[in-house]
Image (cartoon, rainbow, N blue to C red; front, side, top):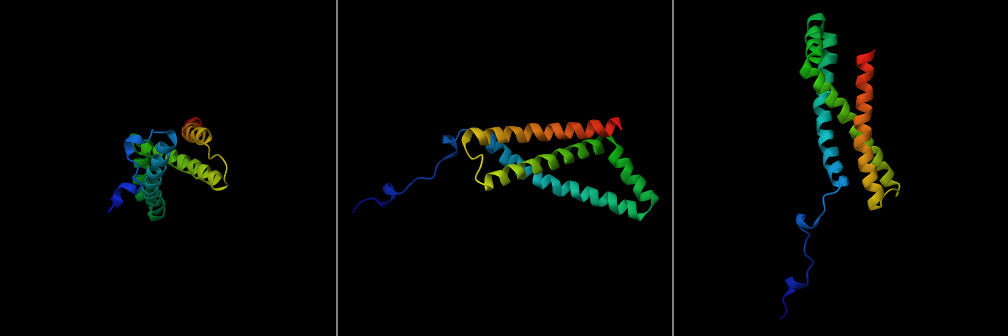
Length: 129
């Protein structure tokens, strides 16, 4: 009787995979999706405060105008841009394009650079105007 287990394929272990930008962007895409839930709760708070009266709106405005509030808003805008660009990247893949290792790596890099660039442009525009 032969050993059946010796003929079965083995699951690959993490140690044989080379960490690639596409893997990192996949992880970050999931994290930014979760961060968007938190940020959306803050936007809802701001909208409810605006509808609730002057005192509630001043409290929300004070929070969003504080150093911590601005950092949270900057992070939220980066997460929004990053998640949107990641979604576009996945849409392109769904059409069957950009699936080669080199192209998918460039897409991952462009997602990161694009999200950081769009965030910087947005916040420079906010501070200038």
